[in-house]
Length: 71
Image (cartoon, rainbow, N blue to C red; front, top):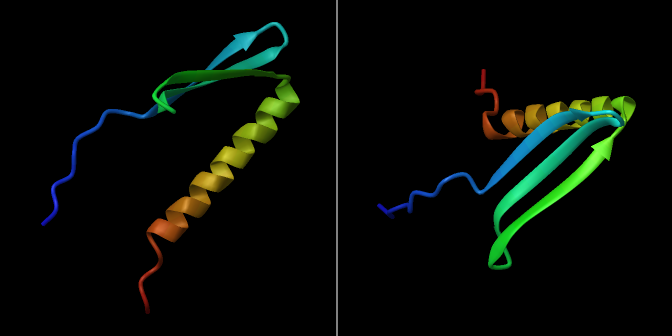
């Protein structure tokens, strides 16, 4: 059996309220040899659309990862 190296989280996502709407920060622990953080500010409608897209992607990934057993 191959051994798997234990690694901590390679990324984090933080959301915070700002006067313009929502600020999202995506931090990657190692991109091209160093840490990188990308930040965007979305208005409320954009933030809701982004959240819906993330939920849909998570649901799709779950269905692909855990397919229904054959009946």
